[in-house]
Amino acid sequence: MKSTSLKLLLSLLFINALVIKIIALPTSPIPYDLSNGTYRLLSWDSSSVVNPSGTYPPNMVFHQSSKPDPQLEDVMETDWECPYNLDSRSRINGLGADGISFINTGQVQEDSVCPDAGYVGEAVLALRTINYKNIIVSWKAGLVSLSGMSNRQYCIRFQYRLGNSDAFIDLLDSSGNPVEYNYSGYLNNNNNPPHEQLFSVTLPSEAENRILVHLRWKYYYLANDSASGTRPKMKVDDIIVSGEMINSIQDEISPEYSISPVSPNPANDRIEINLFSRNECNSSISITDVAGNEISAFENYKIESGINRIELNLTTTALKSGVYFIRIKSILSTDCRKFILMR
Image 1 (tube, rainbow, N blue to C red):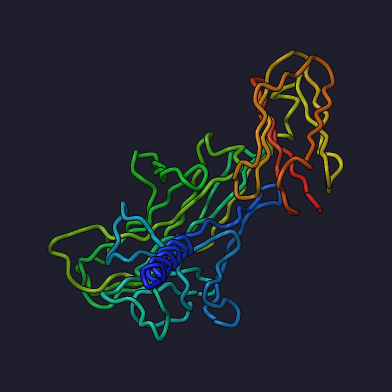
Image 2 (image 1 turned 120 degrees about the vertical axis):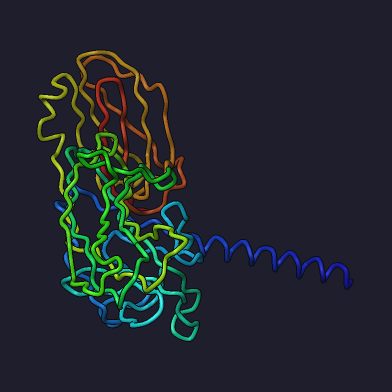
């Protein structure tokens, strides 16, 4: 009996450990759909009433690491869930109209202030770019403050990735250097006035017409064996993302191919789409959720010349009420339509 009880206890502890591990993983925010217009993040308040601990700007999340002075290649392990009005130790602050700041010190927050706090960090913005191209991202990055003389250098690098599992990729400027804020004027200098720089980049074509794209601004340490002094407080501000609709010039891109909206919408047990094509071809059809996870897929669906009526039976799926997307991909075009499921 004792042996059985001990095994049961160990099993429960193991299960709890797995649950804790799953909960601790950094989250991916719900993507902002560019069809809703230009994305703008122009301020972030420090007030715990306006922005309580564990909340984030729209379609964004902040991540932290357990490693002191995390470098560019170090993985951010968990979400930042501390207040935005802290004035000591490693922290993320809301600066109001001046944006969001990051600063690391030699210590994390005390458990009495914020349990499980780490070293900062990164800001990750999720986008849905279906039917959009020429996506322009602009923002400001800057030095907020630095106490005393220091040669301990931090940067804020801008990167992107496709989906939520691929590695982040650098974008290069006209000189072939990664796009990042790297203000060296504060190094070994007692005079450290606030400084900021405006950035504007166009995402590569592979980030266009995607269910999920992540953008990130990573505050990271440039390792230096002789580094000493305090770390700089640096900020990101005025993030603006806009794009150009592909469908607005659909006839120019593919005059022999078009897809109707989903019907009925909202849907209950089935959805229907009418597809016109002048040529026969094979296509793949998939249904995904708002996070880009594929729910079901149909490969080698034959499209006939003329009008094709595509009807999908939703009663055979385990879909719950919510927002979903149906994506149709062929050699002629890739298109996506949103629908709401109500059960």
